Image 1 (spheres, helix red, strand yellow):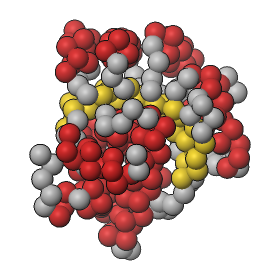
Image 2 (spheres, rainbow, N blue to C red; image 1 turned 45 degrees about the vertical axis):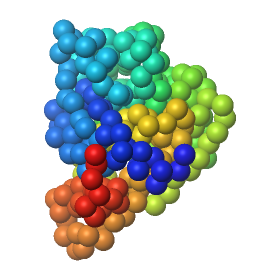
Image 3 (cartoon, helix red, strand yellow; image 1 turned 120 degrees about the vertical axis):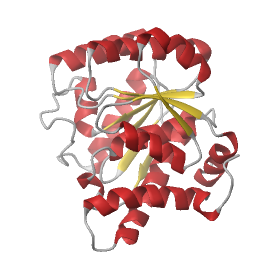
Length: 264
């Protein structure tokens, strides 16, 4: 299903996207979901994870600002969502920054399988065992596009899920060998904290309205590139603060909500 059809489906269905987010970007993730017509739920208490997982249409698990309790909640959400047949997006923010993060991510992946894995290059390399994310959560542009696409394809084959490896040009890969490059966007995107987290939340919204997780990841990436390009045009010569606000405006505009179309 192409991106415009998936956007229309999100507006019509208004999927409930359960986000285990991080303290830096929770508000932005909730607002970007509202901007496309989805409904966010931000919950992370282990005690309610089975009920929340049953209630939500999809889950977006963000491992930034991790804690023992957050990992426990994510494991419950992942296993319950797998059991119920509900899609899960996993964003292992800064997974290679410490051995503890990598160990807990491995434990999570041993417990269940995400449907979409959203990573940058450093995170992909950490999960593939190629190295550690010395730069924290940001991935330096040290690999060419072909190398990034190979990393995405290798991770998709290993984990059996769709992989969206983001950067200046995104690479989407599926376990069945499908591979797509998504270009465009804005030079200002790296200046805004949480742009990747918001994309992961959008992947969750798209995953709720299609059975093809690769198509959902590609559509979310294309939409987010269009949003960032439009946001740069909207904020003109102003800086990253204006660009951050313009991202919300662009998402609302490009999803059709700013034209007064009801989200139902």
